[in-house]
Length: 459
Image 1: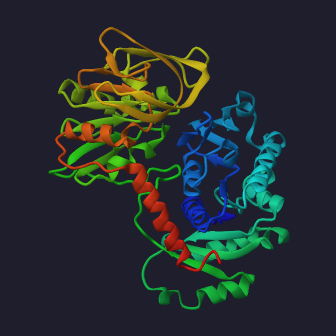
Image 2: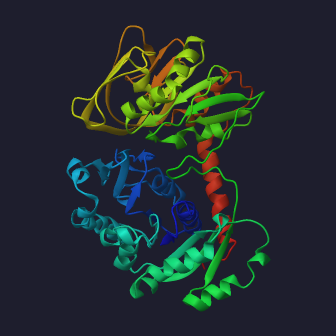
């Protein structure tokens, strides 16, 4: 089990690397994270929702992604509310419970999922969440030390040394744990290290003297193409001579990792924008999915970005909206069941109207792109969208429409399709050659697995 002293210590990255490492050794391996909080979600082949990180880890393990690998997924849709996905399905009753009252209902779900994986696989690599030393959350813990104790996991505690204070983080976290929890920790891991390891001096010996726990690995900082679990770390900037694409990073934006293929294409600069900026000089604008489309639209209006989108649209700039982004490009979003934050008028750039339904669509899809061949992706949405006469079909089966320079689709992962990405970028003036994104991710998993294995951890 991999736990972290803090969020973003690199737990998801290391679990993916370990899953590929064990898979390369011929073991039947599976990832597990009891509870994840992220609006980056994926759909399994049987139509269930899990965190994108666990989906990637399953691919790293060369096994089929399953809901039991991430039995609980929390998807924030307001400052004090998250939609709770239980074994791949939205659970309204659990979502309505106070945070600290959920353990009685959810712990049996976690245990059933965990033990079924332990039965079916030779090796399970478990990821913690946040830090096990969050004292205020320990009474309701169903994801950190409770899981480790339930299955007798060997725990490795990870610190992000690039942030500074890593040894204090490791020592302080260890000190916050109960004796039986400390006994589960088999090693410390220093992640994201830059420079000369000689500069660490005798710090690891000092930490061992204090805790009796060895430092088992120092993982170097590297650039990689693996997606982030739940945070947009990309810091793109407008570059002359590049195809510049504005990505509107409004609150509750979801599934942002589906645009990673654009970030990594040479000659393309994707610029995440949260504040008002002129958009007319960009070659394209992308509006991503949202867990609360109405609030995302209100943010655009409050910041003035909505006005910039309308100006750019009038000037002919291509605009692509995905899922919630497509909905807010439309004429109206109706919310009769109060799933988000009420009815709202859209930007009116695409002749579609959407009604949010209690029933949620979650499925993998392969559909015909009307300008090309088949494209694959996945759907995750409550919306039921109907097109008016001004919008023409872009994708079959009511999954996408186009109106002049405005495009809207329900199909997440569309830009991961090589042929579609090639055509999309060529129309923006790009002269490169798109590569197979899925093959690149697979090669990256092999690369990071070799990096971790080179440290001698795991033994």
